[in-house]
Amino acid sequence: MLRPIALVLSALPTLLLTAAAHANVVVVLNSRDASITLLDQTTFKEVGNINVGKEPHHLMATPDNKSLIVGSAVGNELVFLDPKTGQIQSRMKDIIDPYQIGFSPDQKWFVSNALRLDHVDIYTYNGKDLKLSKRLPLGKLPSHMAFSADSKTVFITQQGSNEVSAIDLATQTVKWTIPVGKLPAGIVMTPDDKHLLVGIMGGDYVEVIDWRAQKTVKKIKAGEGAHNFRAMGDKRHIFVSNRVSNTINIIDQQTLENVGTIDVPGGPDCMELADDGKTLWATLRWVKKVAVIDVPSRKVVRTIPVGRSPHGVYFANHAPRM
Image (cartoon, rainbow, N blue to C red; front, side, top):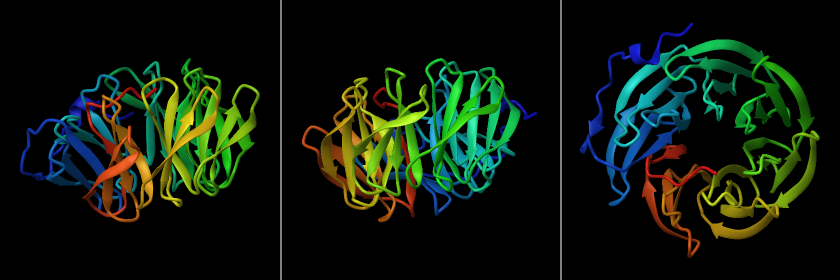
């Protein structure tokens, strides 16, 4: 059993901040530098840099939005930040290889994918504490996750075995596993809870799965290296980043069609969208930068230097995730 989050207030590292209480900070995870870059959302300047455990890849807010959780994969810990300033609040040790993390919609479950160790950890969550319920072996390289609307099922992509598995959260057992395209990465549920969208990183398409029928029903042409998703907040459209072709596509989740392309050089990966829906931020994995994209014109308007292999990106004043 893990200690309560509120009690895991270990000694905090020195923060190299020039504006510790700055509002609207953009948090960027530099996976190869074991660090976090903090950017001013208005001036686009760096306002801080934090050393964290090795390979911080993904991040998400707690359900109450009081903390931003960063998974330090090789560091085997969760780092809790203030979501507005980026300052470290606490650390939780002994979370094994938290490559990708997620809360179920009903907030009763917390799931952590251990990509390098080929297992999924399922925790119960009571709004305060995490308790490990089951460590479940899975296929090779469990990567991203999505949940059913009723919070009964979590779906996991496995990059090394080219599969998607459905896990029953109540029983912590695998319900089914189906083959998909090469190197499946990002996965999201459509707003109508009917289909899973899977970015096929080893191809140039988004695979559409009817998860109740347990089968692929369509392949949406995207760019090479289709990787991750970010909803546009209108409950219809979603961005998909294509790391190899250096593009971001817009997918209509009702018609299941590709309806737009944005050129984004540098290997676009994770994305975050401003609350007005007009500005999209994307980490550029290959060039140590973050791109700022004007959505109406579909053009990159600025790039900002950060650390090596930037991955996750977040800011508090973001658009809805559906």
